[in-house]
Amino acid sequence: MERATLSPACWTASGSVGTRCIALLRRVRASGDAYTLIRNVDRDAVVKALAAGFVAWVGRSREVVRLTARGAEYLDRLARVE
Image (cartoon, rainbow, N blue to C red; front, side, top):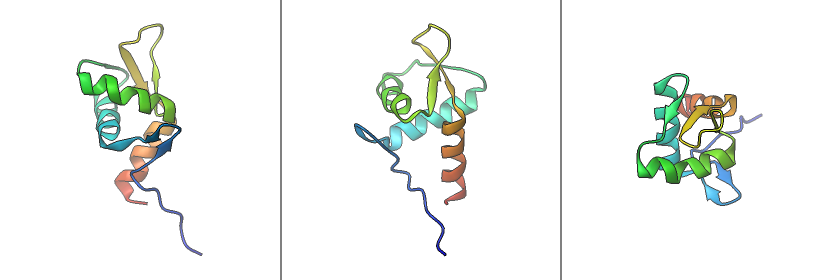
């Protein structure tokens, strides 16, 4: 039986999350509990990350996100190259 593989091209309704989204997820993880969106590319990537369920807003702020369990699992699977 073959193991299912996860490609870095996770798909949402609007298409692949892409490399910018993956880079955002890595910055969010590295920041600890919460990450403040400070770059323009972050603001573009957060739309896809939210659609995929990889990040969530912190409180009512639309400037701070946190990594969800699904986002952490996705990064772990990418790191293991499953």
